[in-house]
Image 1 (tube, rainbow, N blue to C red):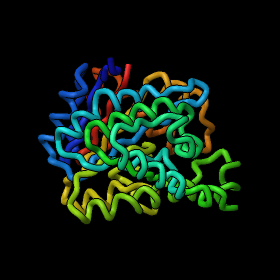
Image 2 (cartoon, rainbow, N blue to C red; image 1 turned 90 degrees about the vertical axis):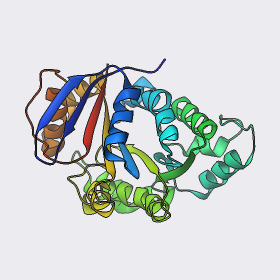
Image 3 (cartoon, one colour; image 1 turned 90 degrees about the horizontal axis):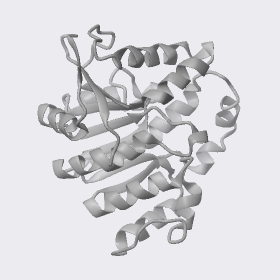
Length: 275
């Protein structure tokens, strides 16, 4: 059974805010799809701690949300967690071209080694489910050579928000999204929460503002947040990431069902908080 969702929040163009308890993730997603009719649905995960070796939000996405996307007509899923290396592309092609083939560390060893998730099992379940539902998964993360750039390595040693790295991830995600959108396909992305914000530009590593305008608001931003991970980050992030801390505190206040103030006054933004 998938994880329940305890809250959906929506912010409208007029800036009116609403928050309500809702334990049915299928109902939440179906309602937002009916309301907005998006061509691009962009999921942003508050990344899980590697020490846990699991991602509740990824599990929720695979179990509860992916079937709804398939029923809506999504044909493609661009995934940040797979690097754009030829080895990954080759094994994804093998996976989709071979009937009955399921992904695991034995059948697709290179895919396993290039996966940028702490736990391969969560990705394995997602990919197998996507294939069963008829959704083609695309590698949307930076390549190994991208991540080995000297400026990216140097930035990775800092305690700040790492703008070059954030921009790199956003650009590589867009490299896969843009041609799919141009073909008129319904697309979903799964990445970090800084890459789907409607209020951020591509220069800031986000696809949100670009595609919200390009698709005439047929763009849906959904942030996936685990309550435990949120509390951990709020306790341990350094002051250098003040902008990020502010956004996380917004999520924290929004996780209270009585929340009725409005800090994010933008269109088509939703957040789902797992128990």
